Length: 333
Image (cartoon, rainbow, N blue to C red; front, top):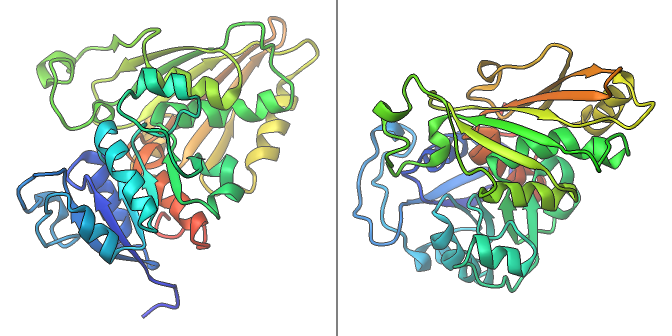
């Protein structure tokens, strides 16, 4: 027995990569009573081999009435359009919702209509779920739009530097981002077929990726964001190229990042020792390193996360912890 309050939780979208990761985390969370694991609407009940001894019951089709009747909090690991349909009635039914999709991340109605056209106007306030920068708002949240995987690494790296006035915002901020194949979700496509991505590296979504809009929303400045597909199963590495203002040096960069994250359990600042994907795989950490060319005022940041953990399921659990008053690292360390 433990002394933690038991929050009844359900997961919708439990058979996808992020959904399976959520079930693994929540099944060992001492404050979570995992009562429901569901797939998409209309899906036949089935056992998921990866969840043996984690969730041995069949994963059923999505049943909104059951989620409303049996849970206190619901995690949505559904496609954007499905999350947009399910989240509002759950919130109206008194549930606290942690949505891993992009459906409610964009605050501007016109941008949301362009990038997530099936998302209705939310009837309740939405909290952007990047834990390190929204802890206070998470405590009273009802609908949390968990941050996207690419935006998580980019915003954690850049936001403290912009807030401290260290970066030349008139100069381009280039974000060269690379992700493992699981970032594309479980539905197979020609691009994610093994024969297409193995032994290759490809850019995609240039000037057409909705995560660029999300990053710009949270940073308040324009960026050039170019994602790439790596032939690995999980992980993100972003190399970010901002220009420093005159007189700003490496010590100023370090001071701003340490001031922002020294009390954050899941941001590890590596300084001049640049991080790698293997350092963060299967963890909820975001590792950030940097180098400065003072003569050119050029800063290079390197940030790494596991796209399925800090970029999805782990961050959702981190948000859940703060929202319900648990220790931020509960179930994640």
